[in-house]
Amino acid sequence: MADDFNQRVIDEFRANGGRVGGMFEGAPLVLLTTVGARTGRPRTTPVMYARDGERILVFGSNAGSDSHPAWYGNLLRRPRVTVEIGDGEKVESRTATATVLRDAERDEAYARQARLVPAFAGYQAATSRVIPVVALYWADDPRARAIGDELVRIHAGIRERLAATRAKVDEALTVSGDASAATGTDRGTAAGPGVGSGAGLSTDIGTGIGAELREHCLTLCSALHGHHTREDTAGFPLLERRFPGLRPALERLRSEHVALADLIRQVEELFSGPRTADPERIGKELDRLTAEIEAHFAYEEEHLVGALNALDTGQPPR
Image (cartoon, rainbow, N blue to C red; front, side, top):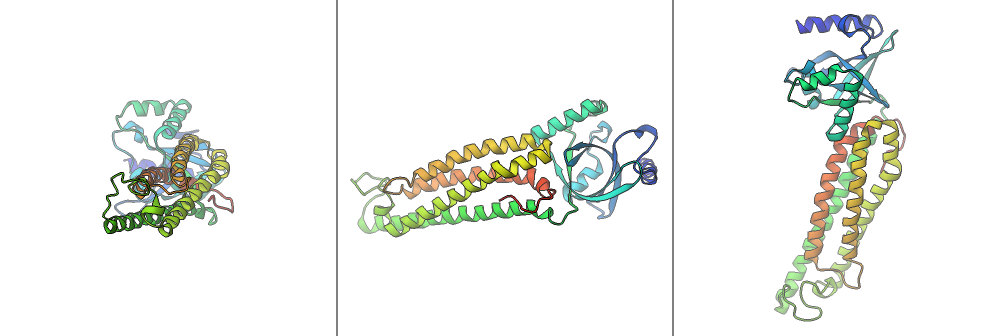
């Protein structure tokens, strides 16, 4: 039975500093312990791995079968895992955080493994499912575990600023609507200078609310620009050096920074003249920016939090 076979490999691995014979002789193996998604009990499986900088990669080939291995489903639910790795003399047990690779990063990692171990090309050819590649980031240092969490907190703060700025736009629209009702004007008509949707906040909704909206928007834009600049100049180069396999994800994030910078510039330009643009237009631009930022943050958190939580630097990226 498979369980009996695995247990013999596990026992041999632990007794011989990570070395085993038979069909796995000479193969780079680790013992991966996950928590059962249904049982809640630990389950240990021998798996082949490949080093990738300071992380290791494991592959859910399941010998080319049409179903994922059980350990893969387990770590999707509980990504904190235990890894036993040997050096030929002793076996070290370490805690790691599992992150599933996606898109080009996954494809490049699997192709590299297939070149090193041709059997993996056969495994993928034997099944229609995409064989998953999982990065394991060491998480023994309690300082390191906070870095990825800090990124999530930074994103949460920016999301709050976006929501607060959008609320200020809604407030401006309400004030503008009340003013239009009081004067009997229609904001959608061109009734002359100072009247209508393009007239500006100082006329339509008052200098006070216009100044507040300007401050909210420009502060938000400044925070986004600063966050992305620090990532581009410090955080991303560090991750690229430590985890080369992250390069495709980092390249995508950098290109998204360029696109977001253009959207941020467009929002800032709405406040560049003597009069602030119409709040309806500001609202539309903010909604577009918010949608792009949310997609960007979601991708970044999915791909980088595990790596950031494995770094051993003392200062988290901001």
